[in-house]
Image 1 (cartoon, rainbow, N blue to C red):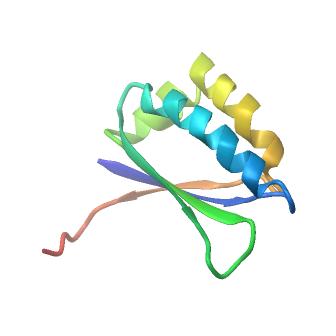
Image 2 (cartoon, helix red, strand yellow):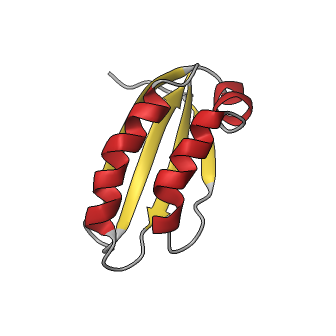
Amino acid sequence: MILEVVVLNIIDGQAPSFEKAFVVAEKIIASADGYIAHELQKCIDVENRYILLVKWQTIEHHMDGFRNSSKYQEWKALLHHFYSSFPTAEHYKNILKCT
């Protein structure tokens, strides 16, 4: 399992519209091959900042599958105009599981 971590900075005043659009967009990503789960969290410390956490079966499912799909084009059309700067996605693998 791979965890995609993306910090999203939203244009001032656009957070409510972004959140509404994300409700639609999350259905798109959830239908992608290799998708496991996701979370969108709003930052308490920095206004208009969110973190998106997406679990994928493999990095290829995200980068080659979703990013090269028509679903990504739908995702992009719904969300990318809300970003004040283009987000960078980073991928992580678990090396320690605490119980």
